Amino acid sequence: MIAVVISGTGLYRPPHVITNAELVESFNRYVDLQNGAHAAEIAAGTRQALVHSSVEFIEKASGIKQRYVIDKDGVLDPTRMRPRFAPRRDDELSLMAEIAVDAAKKALAQAGREAGEIDAVYCAAANMQRAYPAMACEIQAALGAGGFGFDMNVACSSATFAIEQAANAVRAGTARRVLVVDPEITSAHLEWRDRDCHFIFGDVCTAIVVEAADESRSADRWQILGTRLVTQYSNHIRNNAGFLNRCEDTDPDARDKTFMQEGRKVFKEVVPMAAAHIEQHLHALGFEPTHVRRYWLHQANLGMNQLIVKRLVGREVGDDLAPIILSEYANTASAGSIIAFHHHRADLVAGDLGVICSFGAGYSVGSVVVRKM
Image (cartoon, rainbow, N blue to C red; front, side):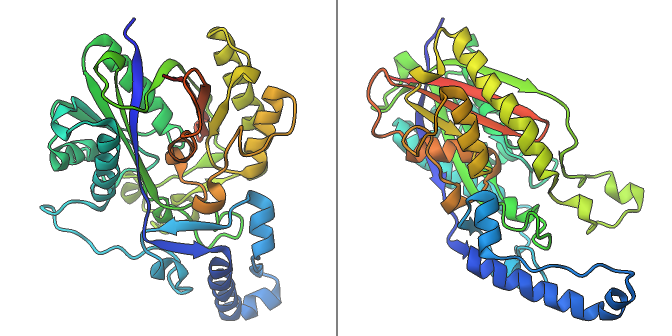
């Protein structure tokens, strides 16, 4: 079987930071405005008063301390509470393609490749900017890559699912090398007015080059020893925005048209599911969880990651075994585990074993077992 490697990664990080303190100040101003506007209904008992958020609540619930966003002013405007993006003409590069091209160029440089050497582009993200033409095709054209491209959406597991497709394409000979890009403009589908989730997401884009090991020029190569994917239907993470909305005569700004989750149920169900998935994948490859030098996990919740790794290795662990980047980046959907891999692999040596794993809506879990070459 052809040995396949990850030979480069790239990261686009937006220019603006929103701290928890800034976010709480904005949210609490929104709460005060809403409670004031509906004071009579609240007094009559026909409407429930909104409750303030706090930095302590956010950090205890998630471990998140800040997030990067493409637009800050719109999010922090208590009369708006969503990003403000300028519309672009059809002949201009779209916003999602723009950040994907930035990350892609960095990944290509790390891999020692030119865009023209890419045979396929997979745009894998939780939400696409439009239905068609495919974002991947636009990114492919903007880069000057060859071959083909397509979009795929498996929510927070989009990147790991795309890595499997990329590795399979290389092994099958349908592509010599594949570029996977994960542009996550999560600020646009987060409900910033909901206390239970207003702090969760941040914007980012990651990129990964996957190619045959014997053709790779990179000095930093990670052999893909195996991939494993699983989905199990659940309604506990959901977003009902879609093209059918206009035919249903529903409110386009209704609560269900943005990110929703039942957090406690997700935590309770996904932790054992993800831990069992990783353990079974490792066993199938002849490894034990304790053989793994580093786990690069999906970055959604600090407690969730800590408990998953504790189930795997039987003890409390620190950042060395399972690095956390969500305190800086927040939840970045499919990009989270790739950011962790991008930032926290330089200290590993040849032969070290690692696991990239994502878990999210669907439910979907994807794992990629890699070894430093």
